[in-house]
Amino acid sequence: MRTARIIVGALVVVLAACARPDTAGKAGEAEGAGTIADTSARPAPSAPPAIVFLGTSLTAGLGLDPDHAYPAIVQQKLDSAGLRYTAVNAGVSGESSAGAVRRIDWILRQPPAVLVIETGANDGLRGQDPDSLKANIQLMIDRVRQSSPSTRIVLAGMEALPNLGADYTRRFRAIYPALAAANHVALIPFLLNGVAGVDSLNQQDGIHPTDAGARIVADNVWPVLVKELR
Image (cartoon, rainbow, N blue to C red):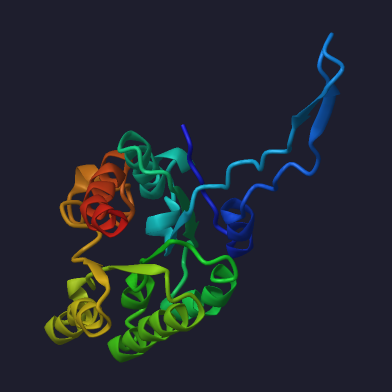
């Protein structure tokens, strides 16, 4: 099973890089014929294009085996569908949208075919201003468009906990569809749809999905992602 899990942005370069071609051919004398057989060097096939999942602990798979985090499950779906891509897990536990902004330029040093942006959960947990979150996501989209126009962007929607009040929850929820519409990027309406608030699908902290929850998250991501790939 091909799975890729990268937490440190620097390793994205390694997983997404192309394989080096063979550097030398071989020539041999055909047995009994007295002629030289030319077996020219053949370049090794290039590595599959990368789908980078830039995110928080929800993407990193906190508390799960790496092969059970939702990007790894997406990789299984890619393989089953015959889609030759490598899913790269660039989730970092505890990261805010400001931290994601600080990593985006490094990730774009080896531009992925698709960048899935999952951020905002920790901003919401800390009660940070939704306008600041919106500005940070917009900044990441702008940098992708400037640095790698061919990279397709998928934005994963997130919800704030209701304890911060109805107005905060409303403003937070509105960020993702507004950004997706303004920038013409694909939107996963709510990453944790069908998982959030369901005890049996979350670990004891009530926030991070279990193995079963991660499979549902992958199901939420898949139809939006595959539409971009096809």
